[in-house]
Image (tube, rainbow, N blue to C red; front, side, top):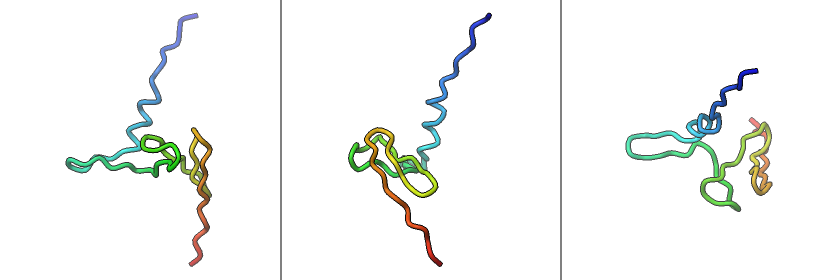
Amino acid sequence: MPKKKKRNRESEKVYKLYRIEGEKLIRLRKTCPKCGEGFFLAQHKNRLACGRCGYTEFISPKKA
């Protein structure tokens, strides 16, 4: 069987975490307070979680 070509999918995902406006780099997700800069919190339905240290912030439902 021929070998499958591997694509570097990790680098494709990184560009979704930042936005460039003029000379400024804007981070689109919140960073982990325990791990520091460079470690983003994953966005789930009801919480923000760090995959490295396990830090979790729960999002309260908005009442209108």
